[in-house]
Structure formats: C-alpha cells, structure tokens
Amino acid sequence: MKALLSTEWLKLRKTKIMPFVLLGPILVFLIAFNVNVSAPEWTGMKYIYAFINANIAYGVLVLPLMSGILATLICRYEHQAGGWKQLFALPTTRGKVYIAKFTVVSIIVLVMQLLVLLAMLAVGLIKQYGEPIPLDLLLRVSLGGWAATLPLIALILWLSTLFHSLAAPFAVNVIFTIPNMLVLNSKYAPFYPWSQPFLMMNVYSGEENGLFYAPLGQLSLVLGASFLLFAAIGFVYMQRKEV
Figure: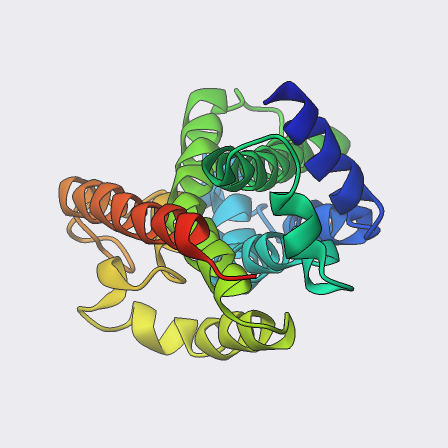
C-alpha cells in the first residue's frame, strides 16, 4: 500500500498540481486582505468577518472545483496508452488502487485547507487585527470543509474511472459547480455534493437565523451517507472495470 501511495503521488505531482493547490489559499488571502474590518460592529470578530467574505468565493466555487479536478487528474495516466491495463497487471488488488487514489487526493485537499487557514492567520497578522485568533473555529470549519469534499472526491473519482476520457468527469464537475450559489439558496443544498463544502465552512451554518442555514446534524448525516454511497459505488466499479 505504501508503494501504491508513493506511485500515485508521483504521478499526480507530474501533472503540475501546485497551481491548483495554491489557487485557493491565494484567493482567500487576497479577498480577506481587502475586506474592511474597521467597522465597530466587527470588533472582536474581524477574523470571522474576513473569513465569511473569502468563503463566498472559495467555498462556493474554488474548493469543490479543485477537489473534482484533483480527483480527475489522478486518473490521467491511466487514460493514456492502456494505462488501466498496465496498472491492473501489477501485483496488487484493484481495491488497493482505488483506496490509494482516494487517499492521495484527500490528503492534498487537506493540505489545501490547512494552507487556507494559514492564509487567514497571515492576513490577521499583517493587518494587525489586534484581537484573539479564533483558532478553534477556523480550524473546525477548515476541517469541516475538508470532510465535506470526501463525497465529492469519491463521486468524481468514480466518474474518472467510468468514462473513457477525462474530459467527461471534468465537464461534469464544472457544470455542477457553476449553479452552486443558486442551489445554496434552496432547500436542496444539504443534499448537493458541490454545496456541502461551503455549508460546512459557513460559520453560521448551525444557527437557524444565519445565512445559508443548514442543520449540522442533518448535514453530517447526509455527508456520511453520500460518502459511503459514492465510495462503495466507486470501489465496486473498480473491481469490475473492464480494460
């Protein structure tokens, strides 16, 4: 398994993923840096207000889009010159191949989330917010956003093995990410994989009077069920995939 993880990481690194990983943190930094937090009503909540503004772009578009792109790119080499046949000829099981690919993408998205957290802390230090850092809250929403990408990663990874071209899963990811803001304003948002990362990163998602309200209990249940569903479908399909 260790060798598989190293191989998948090496293949993904050769696709020049760093711009994709750094795009989110850079965007969050730029938006948060330009947010005016000098109003008296935001005293003691400067980090939260800046993060809310940054999350509108990051959580709605960048995070789900980048998660899907990474899940697509990790299958890039298998779609070239009979790559799936060569991979399945190795002395390993197909199940381990699926787990390795999913694990590598999940870890990279986690790193991206931690970089976003560092970007927010950097903004506060540079602009001298002069207030206690709500590290527990920022860490919780960052990890929550990461957990919310797991069903989406599993879904796009399955599509990347299902289709014979990477253009199809890439197009699906883009098409379903674009209407995210419209879905977030509907009652179906907690059930929409592309909306779940934003909802988990929305600091007011658990407050009934908050914007884009979604009960955390319901959201967590949907996340767990959708992850198990998509992961099971992808895992089983990998076992039966014809090459």
